[in-house]
Amino acid sequence: MLQTAVYPGTFDPLTRGHLDIIQRACRTFGRVIVVVANNSAKAPTFSVAERIRMIKASITHLPNAEVDTFSGLLVDFLKSKQSRILIRGLRAVSDMDYEFQMAAINRRLCNDMETVFLMPDERHTYLSSSIVKDICRRGAPMDSFVTPSVARMLTRKFGRKKKG
Ligand code: COA
Image 1: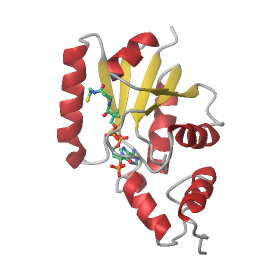
Image 2: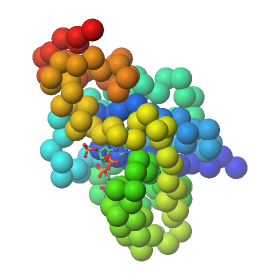
Image 3: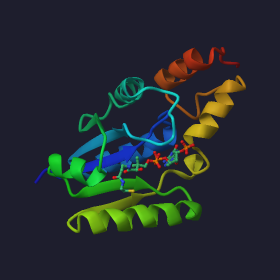
Image 4: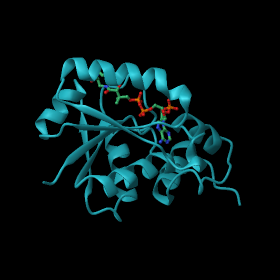
């Protein structure tokens, strides 16, 4: 059976760490839906449409990955896609408190659902979207942190040219 897994996040922007998780999920599940949160309390830099566009451009090599967006409860989105697998990345022990709480709440909301934690490559464990934006604002080369399409969108957003 083709098992559908859902990988949610703010993706503001998508980093190579997120992409690493998506690739691992694609090797493990039949269909992976990367889903951009539309109700984030984070006041994102990129619009939902921009985030969808950057993810689409970064996953063209993954035939079983697709992008969507959601607002409201994540468990409702999973039900609407007949999925019971929620993917989350664990970069370090420091992620654990937050992820444990989220997994527990989601289980309480829908007992049928399983959160599956995937570990990104060690090269990406220190990455976050905020760090990537900060590095871009300071004009550093972005290639090892984000895909070329995300780098272009970041450069456009922050009006800086890449160095090096
Ligand atoms: N590589 C790079 N960065 C990573 C990463 C990875 N593998 N894994 C996590 N991160 C970073 C993100 O870049 C982000 O960094 P930032 O804070 O600098 O922006 C941070 O970790 C957390 O981001 P993310 O994984 O996108 O989680 P989130 O907290 O932004 O999003 C939702 C969480 C949207 C999935 C969650 O709030 C949700 O489900 N909301 C819907 C409402 C709901 O159902 N609530 C009940 C369940 S809690």
